[in-house]
Length: 150
Image (cartoon, rainbow, N blue to C red; front, side, top):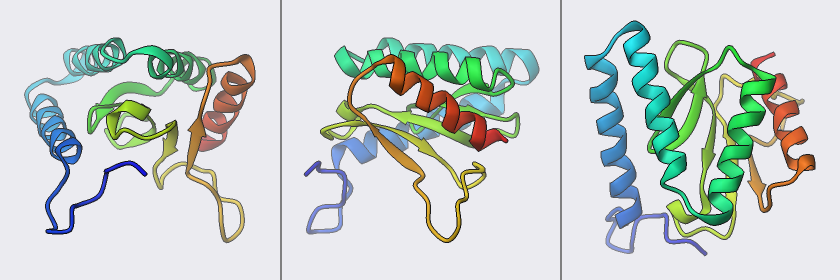
């Protein structure tokens, strides 16, 4: 089990503290730039986040980036707690990629926030485990993104 929760004394893990610091940096960046400059800075932050990954995490992040670009080219790039993420212009991440190495998990995840239109009755998934980059995974990611932005 990954150490992503608080410890027995209620303290955040090192990984959680790092993610919170990254979020603070993202918020400061979003306040200082506007318009095209802001979008360029956020897109560069996403590219840098993916470039900083290794192995399967990087392959999966690149796959997700291509799938999102194909399925919903209107979504804008950004990072969210250091994760590659995409939003519809309001800054709120609709879809994000969390690499396995971020919290020492056994798999990466593709996640969706509550504005994603994935509703299906009284219960539905909003995060999906990604184990290996493949054409099938890319197809399914693109399908989920299309539904999410509906």
